[in-house]
Amino acid sequence: MKMIDDFNFKGKKAIVRVDFNVPLDKQTLEVTDDTRIRGALPTIRKITGDGGSVILMSHLGRPAGRMEKYSLKPVIPVLEKYLGKKVLFANDCLGEEAEKLAAGLKPGDILLLENVRFYPEEEGKPILPETATEEEKKAAKAELKLKQKELAKKLASYAEVYVNDAFGTAHRAHGTTAVIADYFPEDRKMFGYLINSELAAMDRVLNNAQKPFTAIMGGAKVSDKILLIENLLNRVDNLIIGGGMTYTFIKAKGGKIGNSLCEEDKLDLALKIIEKAAEKGVKLYLPVDSLNGDKFDNSANTSLTPVDAVEDGWMGMDIGQKTIEIFSEVIKNSKTILWNGPMGVFEMEKFSGGTTAIAKAIADATAKGAYSLIGGGDSVAAINKNKLADKVSYVSTGGGAMLEYMEGKKLPGIVAIRGE
Ligand code: AMP
Image (tube, rainbow, N blue to C red):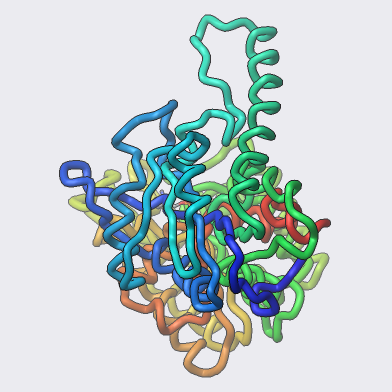
């Protein structure tokens, strides 16, 4: 594996996997949030700045074969605006048009290929009728895996260097995220700047955290976060739990949770986490009070109760004021902070106070010198909503990929380049 900073792209063609899976306006098909496009700019600029040319490939959405509403065309004007130059576009990835355009690239040129998921072999998931038998499914999958190799080989033939900068899909073993790397020698494959910074942020927190290290876990379910919590118990000093998963813990401890979210089959697991935290000397903070609603709606009546005394007919939807104070104090005294998942139903104004307060406490701790990493779609949304993105140390762009990496899993897109 090469480091992008150590590589001179002069006179070279680089094929770059980016994550342009951006939201589009349903009517106008314009890009409504260009964060992901901006994330790829440093890598593109480095290559063209060196005097190389760039072939960009990405997916957008989940098309079943070629579907125009998932075309990457709307990305072109956004790229052109930021790069200040024309961006070439190929209507396909493997056909004559892409091949010709790639062959004709001159130093400084940028070519965007059409949505690579228009080819089912990219993902390796066959599109089959529901009536297909298990055997037919197996055979179709095996055939598609072969085609996936052909796709990767063909795309690799367009360029001399492969750069992966699509952190959001690094947990997928797809043609352009992993398989393609097999067709480049060790010193001709590397990560782009975005993946490098994501890895640096996560490794700093996982392996190099200054203490006290506090992890704040929220969101709906314990089951979604259990692997992450288990991995973190070996690393953190404080584990703060909030959000919907709170109530599974409270019920497991014998509390009354009314109609709050609860995973009945995870009660034992919640107790095990409490036990394990104690064994490892991790301070586990659960909410002490709960802001409840009498229906799952912003117009609900509210009540504030101890977290273990939620009445029937009421649902815990945010952390209460006492909890906010306790959690904020822990956060403000931390040197490393990881936050994943909201403290309540933050989409509803009435129940967004806990999440906002925690976001602010993290920003305050960061101002005092702590390192803070925010990950997961909803916590990132909460940080952005409160305009705090530049007041925390790092906001991850990859929801699922970040979660898997932090759980300790090997991501195919990462392994394909740097090995185990
Ligand atoms: P996750 O994707 O697991 O991070 O969960 C995020 C979702 O959890 C958000 O949509 C929140 O509305 C939801 N959530 C947070 N707290 C609660 C709660 N107390 N009850 C129900 N849902 C919640």
